[in-house]
Amino acid sequence: MLDRRFLAPHALAEWARATPSAVALEHVNGAKLTYEALYTDSLRWAAALQRAGVTAGTHCASLLPNDFPAHRTMLGLAWLQAIEVPLNIAYRGRMLEYALDRAEVTCLVTTYAGWSTVGEVAERLPKLQTVVLVDDATVDDPVCETIPIAELLADTEPATDLAGADAGDIACILFTSGTTGPSKAVVCPWGLVYQMTSWMPDDTLAPGDGFFSALPLFHNSGRSGFNYALVHGARFVFRDKFSATNFWDDTRATNCTTAALVGPMTSVLFHAPARPDDHDNPLESVILGPMIPDMEEFERRFGVRVCTCYGQTEIGAPLASDWDHGPWESCGRVRTDYPFPEVRLVNEQDEPVAVGEVGELLVRVGDPTGFNAGYFGMPDETAAAWRDGWFHTSDAFRVDDDGRFYFVDRMKDTIRRRGENISSFDVESMVLEHPHVVECAAVAIATEHGDDEVMAAVIVDDQDAFDPPELIEFLTPRMPRFMIPRYIEVFDDLPRNETTGRVRKTELRTRGVSERTWDREALAS
Image (tube, rainbow, N blue to C red):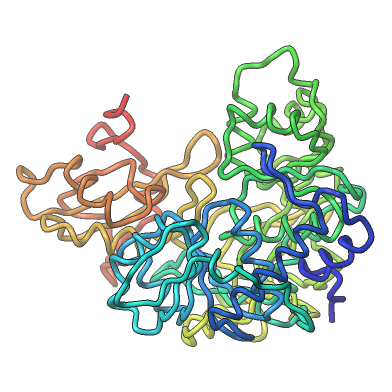
């Protein structure tokens, strides 16, 4: 089993003893916490959450922006061996209710603004008993007991004699996009949190180096990056959300040597107007995925080296590169370190395909502490994904003679927009709540930055009465902003499989937008 020193709370404890005055956590606004201070905070928050009734195995949700309370909550729950359910702060309405109910959450840590959103559905959440507010607000709520964290922390000493998490303990339940059903609740052990970024080359970070990330803690990439920085005694430098305008100023001001990006962020930075000082920055290394066509020019322009990987919430990153990343289309090779993954590319009958041929990527690992433990409360979905001892990713790949893997396409109907995985099922079900919409198919429309925009192809009962802007107005309070369709098009009928009648989404994606497609962003401009 993975040594517990590679897990965030224990790594924090070690560096708090070795380098207590070194900075562990730093916001780009200048606020900082040393290793000693963050360690003490983590144990005080553990004690405070104990007072709120959290114990080992408690399902405790966090609905928090990317700020110090989110990091303290993650660490405090880790010391208690509780199971965190980190929720996207854009969740609202039925989707928020679904996540809290599906994960059987009994305690919630959030802000006053977050609780205002949850309060709209709280009466339909009988398991939710306690809400901890991390800001100064107080709430008198008849449904749940609400307690300010300041009250729980008052006269509270740091907890002692807490075992803290082991690699096989469940760290969190993370929601990822569904395909033919609702979003799935992925059960993630602590080993999986670690391995999502443990593929980085050994010379990426040294103690005291700054590691910049604007990836949120409700994604495993953000959680794993924070864990990785603590393991290496580095400074985890963060911003509440990514800003291309401020990125280079942020990294210069905080003297970061490494940054974590996703493909669309990389593309936006590269396509920004060139500046004379582009090369004048402290960054040496950029960890990203996927790469962009202009990867080598990006490296030359900004004076950085790049490595990449392929990953999913369920499997971490079984494919990764070193600094010699190869062609920009590649995701790297199969890792040889923890959790010792094996991969196969197979056809529809789960038979291996030849080198160069396209097949679905299947993964299994030698150490299960570094892999998903199924979908919480979803046995049918777990069984469908796990067949013959292999996890089926539903992603299509090919491999070359050098062992480099290349992502080809999604074999499932997920949409990735600005770093968020979106369930087409969730979009469709919410659009169908509109009184004029009879049928909906949500598909991805590729952008120049390598991610997707959401298109809703709809059949309506009255085309004269249906108004796309009114649909957007209808959806805005019902779904996260990142899920709201950019494109809407009304069809007399959708392309269908002649045998089953199922919508052929591949045809819709290939067709893309047309002169009949309504574009929300074109209207805004």
